[in-house]
Length: 237
Image (tube, rainbow, N blue to C red; front, side, top):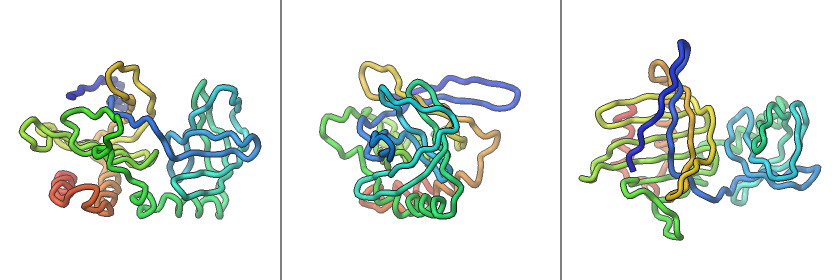
C-alpha cells in the first residue's frame, strides 16, 4: 500500500500527514478514581497523556483527575490536570510532584516499553495488514514501528513513532524527523487506519534519531531480525 502525503506549508513550520495501519485494540487504559470510568490512552509521554473520551464523559480545562493507568499487568497511580478537551479527546498533564514524575519515568522505562511490544505482522486473528508491510511492532501508545518492502523484498521505507518523536527513512528520499502533533481514526473502507499529523524538523533532529536508535537496540531478534535491525541503524546513522 503506497501512501503519499499531503503537505501544508507556512513560513515557520511544515506539517505532513500520514495514513498508517491501525490496530483496533488498546491495552493501555486509565481508570478514574471519582467515577471508575475506564478510558483508552491514545498517547502517553513523560509529561502527560491523551485520553479517548466516551459518551457521557464531561471534563473542563484545569480539572484535576486522579486514577490508575493499567497496561497488561502493570499499573501506575497518577494525578493530572486537564489542559484541553475536544468532543472525543482529552489532554492530561501529569502533576509535577516528585513521586508522580518518578513513577511515570519508571513506567515508561525503555525496558518496560519493549516488554509490551507486540509483533502485529505475526497476528492472524482477522487483522488486515497491507501486502508490502513486512514488520509492524506496536507498544500501545508509546511505540509504533513500520517496515515496508519493495516487491522484490528489499526494504522500501520505515517509520518509527516513539512517544512524541517521529523518524522516517525512504529509499531514494532519505531520512527525516519530526514531532507528533495529532492522531485520529481515518475514514477508510478497506483497512483500519489512523491519520497522523507531524511537525517536520527543518533538519534531522539528532536527539530524536538517538532516541529511536536506543529503542531499536533494546528490541530482541524475536521481534525484529538482526539483519533488519542492522539496516535500520545504518540508515539512522
